[in-house]
Length: 407
Image 1 (spheres, rainbow, N blue to C red):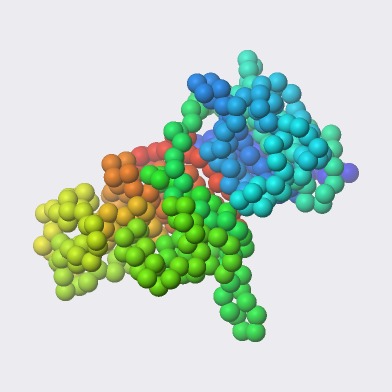
Image 2: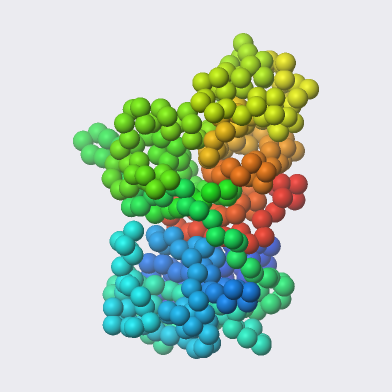
């Protein structure tokens, strides 16, 4: 008992520190959920916030395997809606017998919700949302101690939200263009196989900037390569614009890479014997519906350097040429794998400013892999991978501009 009490006391202390000192409150709530999930040994958790303008409760933070960020329910409907309206905590031991819960199995992911703790986020005056914790791994029942721990976390989050003047209004709902469901990727390793992706569930939306974080070896690049048609999944489903793209033919892959996506890598991969403009022109000429080459070069701020060769340009300028090259294809999605890793701070900001402009003015989706958590503050959503699974997904309710970053 003493060890358990010590663990819970330490958890509350850690949550208090994170929420009190947070520059990014949504990120701090995600860390707090991770702490609760680990202490209670549960499968998933979410923070939901109430929008007064729509009277809906929206999931803004998710930890665990089932991506529900951006999902919303009417206040008063379902478990989270009931808690948001009543301001009273709920324990549901068996969702299959609770009429407030619509379905215990997610039809797309197969995720089974068996039991729930849901507690309100309340400030001095009103309920502003709720915290939901799902499925004890052991199958045991939730205890009064479990409920008290969740209520403490919710109270601390509500205090932080009020003290920091945090406001919430949901983004306009965006269209899903790419979906991964239970995606597994294995590689041969001697007499066995190495499983790098262990069941990825993720949606990518139209016109969003999504950043993927995680330690080396967690599967970030593998996941992006599969989405971008550079590699194949072992099992699961990949859907692009509603079409099953899990096992594309060579012709379909060629068309997809040529017409739908653009790539920007840490290595600039420019052709050294071609000028900046010729590098961009080369890609435009093999694209069926290219954009204007000079407009793409102007978009990245290199009009005056268009006739320079790569060797005559700085690293940041070369990276901007590679972005212009991707833009010239008129892609729906641009995948960027550590595009600032080899650049200094000021040059990185210049490159990030270009990506920001692309999302805001072109309507293009950008998915960026990075080790730099500061860059995640620019994103609409932040996906964190850990050990081949999605550890958490959080919405950035107030994304920073590239010029506001510092590291």
